[in-house]
Each structure stands twice: as structure tokens, then as C-alpha cells.
Image (cartoon, each protein chain N blue to C red):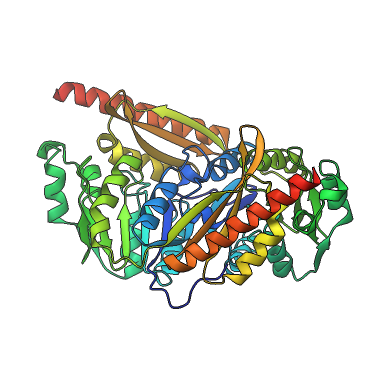
Length: 253
Length: 253
């Protein structure tokens, strides 16, 4: 699928950090949530990576993504234990120092008694120098933004609350518009004419997704474009084609 | 976390291909399934990437992963429509030609009448030259293996059936053993002593995962090693530490 070259796009990548995702012990719930959320506000997610709790892996992935996309959103690795190394890795990637941040410490103290603010909990106030904090309304330990990288928690409820904080600060592109058409046909019945429509509408992205519809194979056609007129034209072409194919199959039957 | 250098490890990466995952329209269910499945048979998943239906993106990711890990498992993009470009991309990455494979065509004919085997459906029989087929017991259109890359469907039921076909052909390493200990403590109460245990047991990976236990914060400690004796020693150290911390908190309370 091609992308209209002139469209004003804002892009993003998601970097999920955590051994527990790669071992399958924890099933990620953040990728789909962030992807849908950003798409809805006009930010295109172009890539996702999941990496283990290993410093070099995190830094290499972060550098690859942050230089390529408008924004990077990380999840995981900002808790109080030894395997929470995301903040330190981000500091290294950006070449800045990291230390307990008085603003972050103050946030922790809104929920944690000073006598309980031990060395482990203070890890959650370690923030790379120059970063802005991302408020955590759920459990107080903040995320942070440095450059184009947003560092968020891995626990879904906390991540979601942080994303709500971050969203108003993002620049957003012309929103990708999307229409879904139920084909009432099998994918294999429409593949060739659908491909011809996709070729004839190069500024529109057309995807085909088979699904089981009450036990019978069916297909959703998803048509996406930033231009409402082009989207409508492609949708109309898809609907006409579907009607023709259905009529042809009725004649054959 | 460090990994015992001497352990016999077999590694893998998962490459999820599809615009629908990046837009959030479809929530991926394959990453967690494959990760858990491979972990259970002694294959370590080290990285996951999700890329769009764009040839160059698919090829670049595939090349990065296949040269680095023992195996790559892809999902998505092997259906009958124009946006199903995975097989062609894999052929390009391996520098081989691709055409309708008589074995794959015969598989399709077990479920599709010859008169319905149109150009679109025949796309599903396009297989890179030199690849082995992966039987699809659900809907007949096969996946394939070429080199160390396994190309599977994106529909979870089909992917799962293909993975069952593939699993017996994989070499597997010494299985990663795992023990989980419920701390009955908050993560912040144990972060420092847990970090000391992790440092004292460098051949064991120790992860700390907070969770809400009937509304109260609790923590699971996951201890992993390929060596049963080292795993038991680390688990015992964790349990002793937890008992000490609990006793200390009872005294303070």
C-alpha cells in the first residue's frame, strides 16, 4: 500500500520493554490500546518492538526508533526493582545523567509516607536530567518525556492514565479516516477486483480482513485515507465491485 | 539480567505483519501465544517486531531478525488479496523466485473446487522456491518454512494449528525453568534486598511483577534458570528474604 506523499503525517513507534512479555508469562495489553488511541488522534503507529530487560537491547531499539519516527512511546521497566532499568537506559541513549528528581520525589510523597521512601522506592524518582514528568494519577510514580520519547509504566491502568496526560501535548497530523465495508463474500472471491481498485486508488489504503461470520467465512474491507473525497470514491468503487461479484455468483449458483 | 554464557540456547524472534495491528483495529493475539508456546518447548523469544504491509519494511525487519536469531516466526499477510505480500517479501529477502507451488495448489484443492480456484485464491499457493510447506489443517492454505524463517497465517486459530505442525521440527535448547513466588509484600518493600539477591545469583534471572491482589498491592517474583540447582538456591534466597522483610514490617507495625 502506498501513502499519499503530500499528507501531513505524525508518526510513532511503540517500544515494549520486559522479559515477561517475551516469555509469554504476561500477555501484552498495551500495544493494541496505544495503537488505537494514537490512530484516533491522528498519530500513525508505524512500528512496534518488544525487547528484554537488557540494557544494550533497550538502547539499540530506542535509538533506532527515536531517530526514525516523530514519537516513541515505551512501556515497562520503571518500577522500584533491579529489573526496572528503562530510565537508566533512556538517560544513556540521550547521553544525559540521571538522579533522583525532586519533583518526582515530591509526587511519590503524595502517596508514600516519608519513612517508607526507601532506596527501592526512590528508584522510581530517578529521572534523566532535562526530562519533563508525566503525572501518574493511579499510583503517583511518574513517567517522563525526554526529546521525542515518552516513558510510561507497563501496568495497563497506569499506562492508560499516563497516555491521557501525554495526548494533549502531542502534535497530531491530518487524521487518517477509515471506512469498513462488510463484503458478504469470501476473500478469495474478491481478491483480484479488489487489487485492481487498490491500484486505481493509489492515495487510499485498502485492507482485506477475513473473519468468521456466524460460522461462515466473510470479509471486512477497510479503506483508509486522509482525504475524505478520495476515501468516498474508493469506498464507492469497492461497494460497486462487491455488488457485481455477488450478482455474478448468484448467476453461477 | 545476565544469562549463563554456557547454556545451550535456541533463540527466536516474532515478526507480526499487518497494518491492522498498527492501527489498533485488530488486537494481536499471536505474540503472547507464540511466546508462551516457544518458551515451553525450550526456545527463547528474544525480540518481537510489528511492521506494516510495506515491502521494504517487511524485508528490512526480516533480514535483521533472521540473521540474529535461531528462528523467525512471522504471522500475517499470506491470504488471497493484494495486501497479502509476505510470501513475495520473504522470497525477495532470500533472493529466490516465487511461483504457484503444485504441492500448495493441491492442498488448496482439498477444500476449494477447481472452478473456484481463481487468480486471487491461487495467490495462496505462491511459495518461494526451495521452501517447505507448513500444513494448514484449518483452511488448507499452507504456510511455509525457508531457511530459519517460518511463515504462518495471521488468523489465530490457523496460526496455532501451523505452530503445532512446526514445533516437532524445531531444535530446542535446555528448557528455561521458572518458579513464581508470591511475595505478599509491595514491590517497594523488597526492591533493595531483591536486587542484592539478583546480583549474588548472576546465572539466574529474577523478575519482579506487581499486581493487585483483591485490591491490595502485591508482587510476584519470577525466578528463571536453565539449571535446577541454581534455580532452587535463588528461590530459597528469595523466600528467606521475603520472610525477613515480612517479620521486619510486623515489628514496625
